[in-house]
Image 1 (spheres, one colour):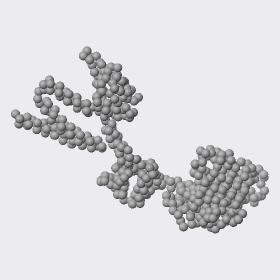
Image 2 (image 1 turned 45 degrees about the vertical axis):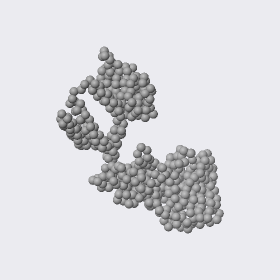
Image 3 (image 1 turned 30 degrees about the horizontal axis):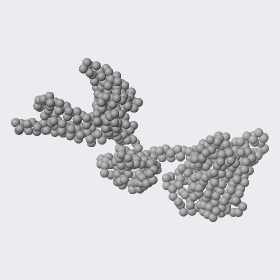
Image 4 (image 1 turned 90 degrees about the vertical axis):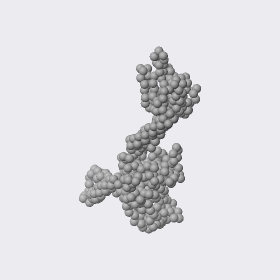
Length: 549
């Protein structure tokens, strides 16, 4: 007898083990992602443990007392695994089990007698009303519902709700059994996000913030590094076969971590390809701190930029030659080289000549802009007298200030101010600043050019009595094509490039440029230059900036 019972028990155990192994093999083959690391093992353990119990129960007759005992045991297991609530016909909670109370954070007395709606937000309440209509028709419902906790946060539950009836068959309410699937949803969302990231053309890295070890890498990154076969597991940033790029990226990560800043962006060459690198620091919360790194291939963008630059440069050069001839011919006509012109014709020719000057300035600005972008701005250093350069600039702009009825005062140039610099570039900066001052001055106003000579540097300022720069526009004053509220570029002329070019020239010569302004009073642009700019000339080569001696 004992042996027969033992044999049956062994057989039941073997059946459970076989079913568990079958589930594990099938689930491992069918599932993928994070879920595949949990579900197969959990299911196998459950089948191996529960199937023998069920078989032994079905193999012997049960007495009424035993049925009550088994029912109590099943309810105990159910209470530990499933949240249960009972609702009356008025949609009020009349019973909740311990797990629901524990999970939601409410006290039992906070729930009993209260509308079921309190466990849902506005979206969930619409679903509750739909389920209630189904229950009234005698239909059950199953699906996912959000459940609002006492602290205001939400979890997602897989819920089965069935109608309840009294002895006369009258509908009296419903019972719901809920299983928390929040974590499973998160795992599925992570898997979905990973699948989306894998399809991006941009390369995505996720690094552990302490060890700089890879915790994720999309397909584009694996292809770039030729890690497709072995994957990224067990590898760190130091395993990337480009020491210089690794150093730059690693330093940027450590700086973010040290300063507690969130983002960094820069360009770097990685394995011969130019990339725009974006790094986002994800501080420690529920999991270790990480760095999210996005690498965008700039090869195509730079090729397009170069094509555009070459086109603009070509067009500008092609325009400048005929325009110079046109301007020269008009100058000869205005000097009566072909005979005296009627007053009306001379007036029209002067307008055309001034606009030809404008076009030449615009073309020169565009060409300078391209040189700056390409890192090819040329400087010819000479020993000069700064005062002489300022007076030369004033004379060159005499026609403009006379036309506008302006007076220019020059201060601080009584004695020679020796300077080693590029005189043509300094005149270009002064001309831009003086031209701006003329455009934005009131008729009859005074423009002051002043120089302060220090031991090793000089400070030059150009001050007008114009309308000033609005506060909201001051941050973009040195930007290309800056469109200020009171600029009136169409009426006053200009390309919006002059101040940007001035900044590039001054900084390339080792100096600094800035401004002071007050609305309704005027603006003072100033720049400071070392007296020996040749030893501090900054040469810009695309992304490389260095000091040249």
